Every structure is written in structure tokens, then in C-alpha cells.
Length: 367
Image (cartoon, rainbow, N blue to C red; front, side, top):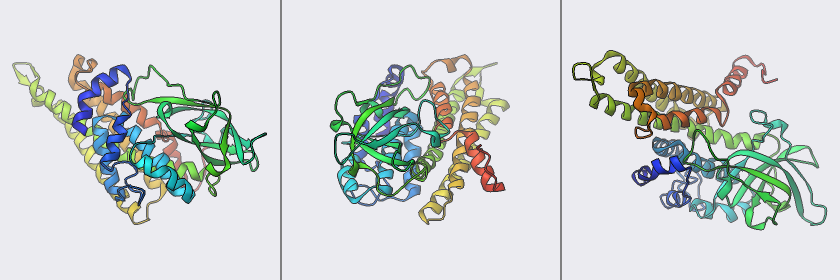
């Protein structure tokens, strides 16, 4: 599959096209919801799931992003917090890639501060057993093509944040819109959009029964962050491979390959070291996660460090290409643009610094 996807990647990135059949193919291979037991999922270890993520991100961060939202954020959320009826209804089709999901947390006015969300769920004024949800979410991967949207909203009855499964097919016209966000500088090979809700009726049975507050979305995000930490090393390894090939083939100064020069070799050595160290750190956290011993701060640490290192090294390796880096023929610029995005979503580097700082000092520095 990576070879087939790589063959269509350049045109997909240029035109901002995402073929949702890619998720069906991932489902056929058992890649979706890989750590979930039952429902047609693979029941694999967290380490195995991370290595899957790494392989997909080596091709492109956009394809990994679409897979992560489906697997970690939506399927993972349903498996962790859903009722048995919700699991039976959604997970088997999602595991096959026949039903696509989106995760709605970030709002236009609230990115790193989800606790201030404005999206509101209240009893429906005319439909018994239903809730009415209004609000907006933005920068939502897969939203333009999603069949089910896991939306987090404040429940008017308690003031607490709750999770709601919104099925597109059941939304009356005008109550749900998911316009795409176009003209992105990065993640152009994935679909990104908004979720706009205007008194959208949602059955009470589609609300997660017990989880309240930010524990729900943050549990889902931690699973996705873990996958991103693995994925970053895959993207960086592809940057290394592309740079090595170019440096061996490109001749400058008396016919010498660029790879002969010390500055080029140091750039490659630094990048290979960070890729190896990042992979080993992610594997160790994955093993602890499989044993039920991983703390959220461990995931923040590897997400922050691997994202920062991958972006820094990709930018430095890009210098080896000189002016040729401007051409998308070489692929290095695509990775750099993507890695900037992955370093910002699922918690920016600064936010993860504060999570670690709180763990170290015991003092909350967010506010």
C-alpha cells in the first residue's frame, strides 16, 4: 500500500485531493483501530500500532493524520467511553473503513484552551429523547467526508463537557455543515474542514454515558499523540533517505558528491541520531503503555521532543538541496511544511512543556 499511495502523492498534494478509498484499503489491511480487541480490529499492541503509524507517516503526514483521527480519536473514543450499543453500531464499519469519522474539539476561538469551548448541547425543545447542539469546530481532519462526528460540547444541564456521536445521515438540512478548509500550506494530501452545528438534533442515546469534563477528549488525544511521536520518526527517516540520495548523486566542486563534505555528513549524522533516539523512546513508552504503566506526561515528552527534532532536522536537511528544495520533485519541502503542522496540533510544543513543567514542579502554569 505505501508504494501505491506514494505514486499518487505528488498530484494529491498539489491539488489538495484526498481519496477516501485509502481508508478502506487501510481497513482491509487491519490498520484501523489496530489496538482495539474485537469488532473486526486487529487487537495489536501499542508498539505495533505505533510502527504502523511510523510507516504511513514516512509516506506523508496527511495520510497518517486521516488514519489517526479514524483510529485513535474516534474509534478509540468509542471503544473507551461508548456504550455497548454504540460500539456494536459504529466500530465494525469503521474498522473496515466503510464508515469514516471526525473528531470535533478545537473551536475557532479556543485552540489550546478547550475548557472554554462554546459549543452547547441542551434538551431539544420539540423532540423527546433528543438534544439540540449548536456551535462550531475548526481544523477538523476528515470532517468534509465523515459519516459520524465525535463532537465535544458543554451539556447545559450540568455545565460539563460531554461527547456526542453525530450521524450525518440523520441531520436535517441546515443543521450540520462541514465545509472544507482550502489553500493550506501543509497537510495538503489530507482533508481538513469545519463542523458547523445549528440546533442539530442528536439522540440522547448517542451521548457517551459517563465520561465528563476534559478527561474524555484528553484520553483520546493522548492516544493520538502517542501515534504522532512514532510518526515523526517515519517522516524524518524519509527526509534522511531523500537527502542521502541527493547528496550522493549531486556533484559540486571538482566533481565531488555533496556527501563528501563534512557539513553535509554532520547534518545527516544529527538527523539519524535523533530519528533513532526518538524511535527508541517511543517504543519504550509503547511497551509501558501495553503494560498499563505509561503516564500521560511520558506521551507529552515524546510527542514534544520527536515533533521538535523532526521539524528541526528536516529544515536543516532541506539546506542540502539548495535551491532545488523549492521544487516539490524532491519531497523535502512537503515534509517540512507537514512537520510544522504536526508540531502544532494535538498540543503545541509549548503546551507540552507546561504539562511537563506541572509534573516536575507540581505547579499549574497554564493560567
